[in-house]
Image 1 (tube, rainbow, N blue to C red):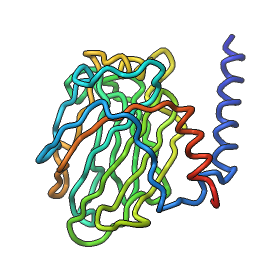
Image 2: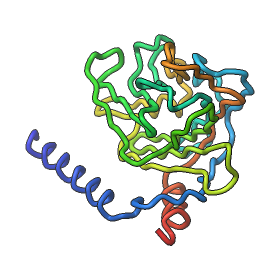
Image 3: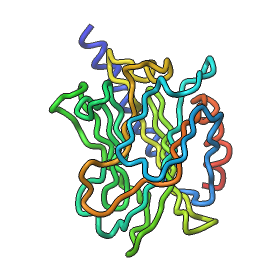
Image 4: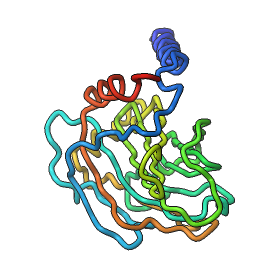
Length: 235
């Protein structure tokens, strides 16, 4: 049984390698706007930093949905960010220490911190090597769309200063779930034990999350077809 599980892990790693090396996402398309899907939550905010969003606050989710999109804004001078800037944490309680997945801004791109269990001291950081932001002097507002499923993430960032060619994209070939831990099922089920916490309790520079927070629903199969048809064309 152990040998079989080991072989399955090897095949999964090979599959991910083939996806990454195939060049499907090798060249970004800065004009492409990923569809958001059906709105299931919207709130206007002055500053969403430190907002705790319970999934029980979200409207009922359509049967067959297996993905959600979190939309938020971040406003800061990126050139003055001197350490990891936390943007989002996915939690099993309202206490931030009980997070199981965290999203950070770091040096012009995104870092994803995945814990082996809630409140665990053990984690690994996955640093994206592709740029997701342009780092200029001065305060700039970026809009972030975080598509998350059990086994796949898609991130789109938008420079709100521009109206065209202002988006950056990245696929991540893992999602919220861990072996024996169906976190995504809890989020889709609007569990009272599933939370999204926005922002950083101690940012290294002035940092706000203005305007809105929103959640949309989507189906992974439809997103995959959309990306293959429209994002990957001419790439």
